[in-house]
Length: 550
Image (cartoon, rainbow, N blue to C red):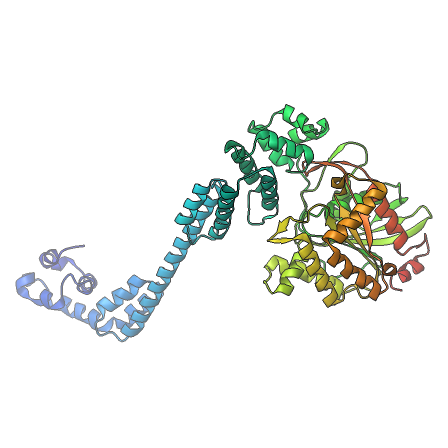
């Protein structure tokens, strides 16, 4: 940018447009250029007229140019060059709006940067170190992770005051597994175990003893990380009493099966008996259903299973059932379906009496019972939760079929105190019961309601003793829910007014992910399904279609 003196000395070299630009930028003025003492008489009359004409007649073109550029600088240039311009008020307003937008965008970027920075700090934070958690809270007071950090800090303070033993550790592991806010659950659990041993709160032998009592205390990924970090040795696994085949499967790093999120169901259109499976996440619902589907397909209880390849959950049905093979080998359990996904699986079972049983199994989203609670409690639903609840409403209320129906509530044995977003399994089941009663979705077409108690191998009982234990267990822990379901059965004459209690086990499960499948429990459920579902002699299709809407 030339100085004023340079302009004076070389005025004949500048165009009228350039001189107007320098005048508007405040480097000089028209009056000073016209002074012959400054420009040595070189500012010709013709160029003076050109400069003056541009200055007097450029208001509209300059305003149009400023509007096209639509920048803070463009409007400022107009204001600087047109002291009496007709658009000065509008220029000021537009400039202020742009400056506010720039400031808002800058603030947004700063906030986004701060959130990203706090997220990285949170993900890398040792959540077992009370000083590290305290520092995080101080450095990131407004982070979306700070509320969780405060809860972790409170827990660590409590443990410092009360002390930590193996029972406290086991409860913390369960809390981490069910806490949706913890992103890297396995890494967090490994860090928790190794840190508590390093601090001397528990010993390595304490942990080994805990796993020997419960081979499913932690999953295969956690056990493999503990082995790779040299926290555990092969001899330690043997000391836990774990079958060598499970250890070999874990060391091979065999991964659980994953499933894609399905297209939402709007209605059940297939003429069949509909069988619904209810349960909260991690109750064992999907695994139990997979075992039942496997037995239905193996030709031992039913002669054959003809799958409907047009149903929404056709691929899921095949993959899920294929995980369970009663051949003595170790199978890998599913990672777990999306807690917001509901699957529809249609098939025909042919019984040993050569009768055809058209059946549609519906694996309800694991989040549904919690959605029911949150909806009735007015806590507000996320977009995914609202979609899961809408699927249930579509299928069982708005677009309800006239098919006969059976319902299985899957309840995990021994999971009474495990918390899901601060509430235990029984609280969500009770909330689901109230939702069901209010919507009356069991009032019509329901032939049977059953409580399927999963993971009963933890009771270490069999036969009549196990049946008595499950009755006691339900009456002690879930009596309110049981009584409510029984009242529905009595009011609507379902299943003779009784609620069936069914023990269920997959067989020998280890590290939460691996199973040596035993089909006995699934055999009983498939036999029950054959007894309680509509059927007709093979070939009598007209009667088959009528029997499900009677």
